[in-house]
Length: 114
Length: 110
Image (tube, rainbow over all chains, first blue to last red; front, side, top):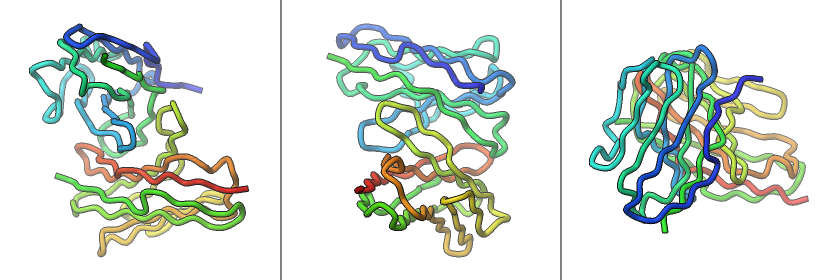
């Protein structure tokens, strides 16, 4: 069964350091999402890609966060510098298109900033 | 933008009983409403969804209802089992993005 792959599963980093997360969506899925989920809350959208283009990054803290999907397949989310408040689960999801098709999530990366 | 509210935040039921989780949304343009189940340490898993041209959808013990006029939709789980224990999220989507509720922690007691 096709899955969204994310790595690493867990990451501990010191504040002010740089950290990066990787996501490989389900093959053929044009739309890719990065969500942040704080413990006890629902996922919040950070950035959405359609193929290699960013279509929504209105909630992305652009002073420290960046995301890319250069070839329209896998994607990287980076935080530099990391802050204590960035500790959360970072979830990647993909769907066939933006037009309300099912979004499938990966297992997530649990980030702890110390 | 879209705002999704979900109730209750926690729900405890006895095995075999039914569980109902309710969500409201604000954006009348939303037309796709999925429900996700999230187990500890894992990503959300889609369990059922409904589109705005349908009022009800059922899949075995799980059903979802949608009231477009009132802008609310509900998840119904019948004959609950201990393995149904998890956090459940509703979401609402227009053609641009999807917003999630805050989640309901369901506990099914054996």
